[in-house]
Image (cartoon, rainbow, N blue to C red; front, side, top):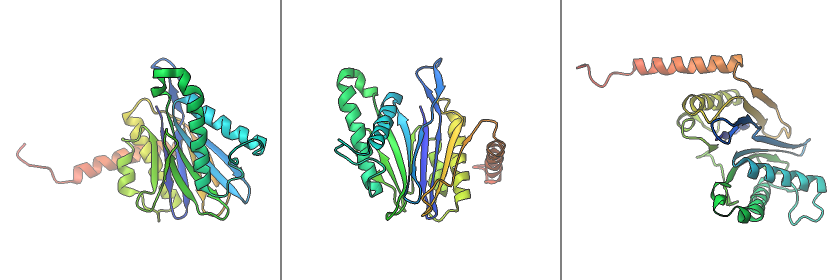
Amino acid sequence: MTYCVGLRLDRGIIFASDTRTNAGFDNIASFTKMHVWEKKDDRVLVLLTAGNLAVTQAVISLLNESIVAGGEGEEQPSLMDVTTMFQAARLIGAKLREVHETDGVLLGHDAQSFSASFILGGQIKGDTPRLFQIYNEGNFIEATADTPFFQAGEHKYGKPILDRVAVPEMRMGDAAKLLLISFDSTLRSNLSVGMPIDLLIYRTDTFHVGEKRRIEADDPYFKSLSDGWSRALRDAFANIESYTNDY
């Protein structure tokens, strides 16, 4: 399984993804699920992947081959040529359908497990920062002020804190803290999501990656955040009036 999240703010977009993948309890490995394309002073595109690793890797390979080919012989432009984030989302959806059409027929009934989804975000010059969730069928939706974040994979444990706290006007440092708390909640409740965590911060109109780092299990800040959040929850619980004093 996996957990990926993207949060669009007034100040930019923050992305985070875990690195665990498994094909059974005794076959666990780490693969990055965060892919970045950057053209200085022109565009930054970040793609988070979830689902079948063979599908997601095939889609990434097709996207990269299209860039290397410079669009020659391609029906669609590459990620380096599209002029809006909407076009980038359409392109990724088309590549995903291409993989399904090529390999899905050969898998037959097993094709039901041959699924993937993506979170795409970034900014292209002349366009605003935008965030999309791309589904297994290749269609997609875009984040709005009412719904500023998207999750993929094992999202249910990390969603409550995002629902309660995430607002577009947040500062980037607070938003990064929020995403890591969301991850901490998921890690505590689901063994299929695992460290390390890839974190990326993109600030509006900079057209370059502001910060990209890998957070390991022994990272001092993450350990402090995890311990502090646990204490804060216990304190909040203790300070709320009991249902009844009869017991």
